[in-house]
Length: 69
Image: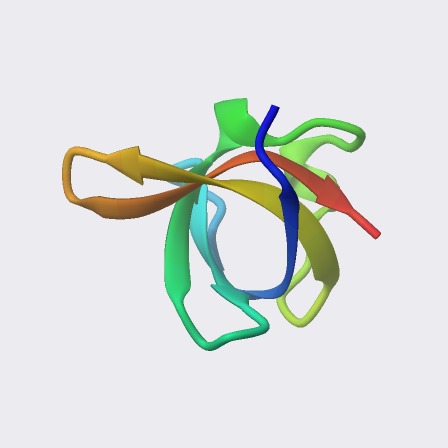
């Protein structure tokens, strides 16, 4: 299991089921609603603190196993 990274949700596109989270180091990661655990996707809010694991998607960095703090 990868080490968890802390970050903040920057943008949520609720009608499409995805969003973007900024890690504390400034790197931005895409996340899909299927990568959320510990909460429902529609409970997440922009500005919310989260932890996640770094992944790599077809278009760039992707957050996996995203959980609210």
